Length: 206
Image 1: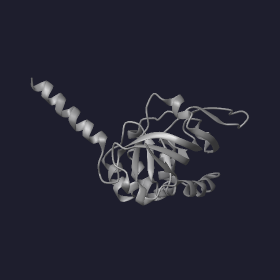
Image 2 (image 1 turned 30 degrees about the vertical axis):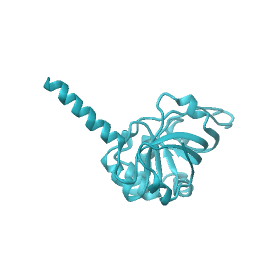
Image 3 (image 1 turned 180 degrees about the horizontal axis):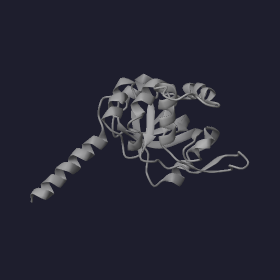
Image 4 (image 1 turned 120 degrees about the vertical axis):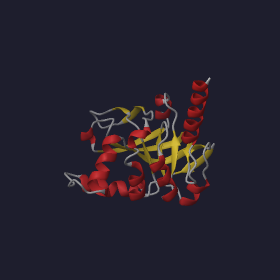
């Protein structure tokens, strides 16, 4: 398993190939549907005005996300009353829901990695080539195990979105993932989809 520290350089990203297991160490943020939509509308397409602390959050995120990684995750968090936050479970959520937004977010913030499950589509794959960046597949159903890779919860933004949809800033150590979409246009998800379609067609033809 290859050990990679965050922030990640372009050179390291281009050296990664699909199927390669990786252990990530460094600071990452969580972000799902509400976060991606908010980033697109407020700061990328600017179809809505920033409100409250939006601008301060944006400036903080620019620092963290440059060369960084976003994790499609709706964590279960303890210590909400005391603000002594701890991730109880931190499994990946299905990534395809972010397909309309992900490439634009990657380009805007110079994101180097996206972690989730199930892979993403053609727009994100093209974005991975252009930025460059990669998609890391995390193991679904291993929420508690993955939570053990979270060394520390450094903070949270936009908690008004709700605990699962908020932007959690976490420090991870040896977070286990596999590269399934690389910066060279290769996608294991695309291969599986094509193979599955071919098998189905063969079965129907019998």
